[in-house]
Amino acid sequence: METAAVKTPNTAKRTARGAPKAQLDRNDWIEAAIDVLAKGGVGGLRVEVLAKTCGVTKGSFYWHFKDRQDLLSAVLERWREGRIRDIEKTTAVEPGKERDQLHYVIEVYGASRNRKGMSIELAVRDWARHDAVAAAVVEAVDLYRLECTRKLFVRAGMTEAEAKSRSLLLYACVFGLSLMHYDSFDQQLPDLKQRIAERIVSA
Amino acid sequence: METAAVKTPNTAKRTARGAPKAQLDRNDWIEAAIDVLAKGGVGGLRVEVLAKTCGVTKGSFYWHFKDRQDLLSAVLERWREGRIRDIEKTTAVEPGKERDQLHYVIEVYGASRNRKGMSIELAVRDWARHDAVAAAVVEAVDLYRLECTRKLFVRAGMTEAEAKSRSLLLYACVFGLSLMHYDSFDQQLPDLKQRIAERIVSA
DNA sequence: CAATCGCCATACTGTGTCGTATGGAAGATG
DNA sequence: CATCTTCCATACGACACAGTATGGCGATTG
Image (tube, rainbow over all chains, first blue to last red; front, top):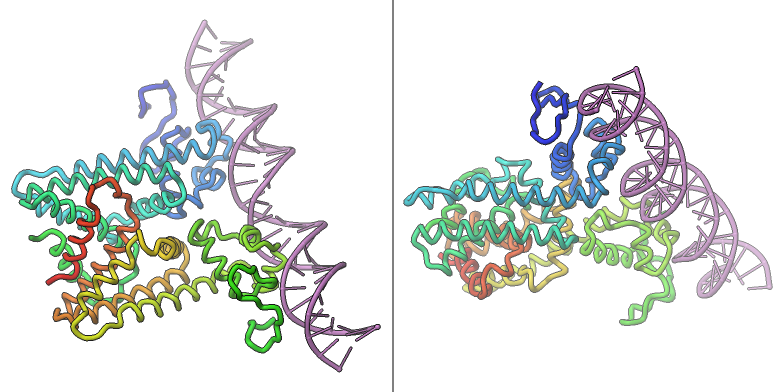
C-alpha cells in the first residue's frame, strides 16, 4: 500500500482509479468543490451538498476546513495557480512559431474543447462580480495571460501597442464566445471561427 | 387571478418622479427585480429581499405573482423585449454610415458606459448556464443581434461569410471585455479599445 | 351606510443550510 | 493491551427563505 502524499503516515490511501479513497484530505475536498463549482456556480457550492457528493457528511468537512469561506479561498487559490501554470505551458514556443501557437491558444479555449475548464472559468468570473477576493484573483490571472500572449504577438513582429490590443482582443473574444448562444447562427461555424482566429492573429 | 390589464380603475397611480407610489403593480415588481438581478444575480433575487427593497412585505408579492418562478419568467421576457427593441434602434442607420454605426454599437456596449445594462446582461447569461428557459431567451437575443449587425457588415460591403464572422467577433469581444479585469494592463486603454474596434469593423 | 374589492401585513409551516458539540471507529503509539 | 490521534457521523440550534392562510385597511360601489 502506497501513500500518495509524503507528510502523514496515513495508511489506507488508494489513489487507484475507481476505488474511492477511504479517507479524504483537504486536496480531495478542493477538487470536488471545483467540480461542483463548474456545474452550479458559487451559489451551488454548499457544504452539505459537497459532502454528499464526496459520500461523507459535513462532519468531515469541518475537520478539514474552518468554515465555508476557508474552502472558497482555497478553491480560488487553486484555480489561480492552475491557470498560471497552464498559460505558461501553453505560450511557451520556439521562435518562428508564435502565430501557430496563438492559433493553438484560441483553439484550446474553444467552448467545444475544454468544456469543464470553461465552466469553471465562467463560474469564477461571475463569482468575481460580487466578491472582491475573487475579483483580485481574476485580475491577476487576466493580467498574466494578457502579458503572455502579448509577448507572442511582439515576437511575431507587432508593435507594442498593437500586440497589447491583439492580446486583449484574443481573450475577450474567447471568453465572449463561451458566453454566447450562437449554434444556429450559421451552418459552417468552424469556418466562421477560423475567420475570427485569422482576424485576431494575422497581420 | 388574471393578468393586470387596463380594465381596473386603479385610482392612486402617481408615476410622478420622486414620489414613491402608494401602490405597486406587476410592472413595478419586475423593474425592481431587474435592479436586484443586476446587483446580485439570479441567486440574489429572493422574494423577501425584493419585497424589502420595495418597502413592503412578501404578502404584496404573492398577490401579484403566483410564485418566484412567475417573477423570473416575467423578468426574462421583459429583458428579451427590451434587448430586441434596443438593437433594432441601435442598428437602424442611413446608407453609407454603416461602419460608423458599428463603431457606435461597440461603444454603447462598453463596460464604462451602460454599466447597469451590462450587469444585467452578465447576470442573465450566467442564469442561462443553469436554466433552459433563460438559455433560450439568450439564444434568441443573440441570434437577433448577430443578424442585425451582420446586415450592417453586408451593407458595408463585406461578403456574407465575412459579415457573419465579424458580427460574431463584435459581440464576443464586447461581452468578453465586460467579463475581464484588465484596468491595469495598459495606461492608454482608450487607444487599445480603439485599435480593437478598428480590427473588428475595418476591412 | 354597508358591502365589496384591491392591496398589503402578519403569522405560520416546512425546508435547506451553516456552524458547533460530541461521540465513535480505526489505526498509530507507548 | 491501553491510550492517543485522526477522521468522520450524529444531533442540535440558529437563521434565511418559499409559500400559505388569514386578517385588516382604505377606496370604490350600490
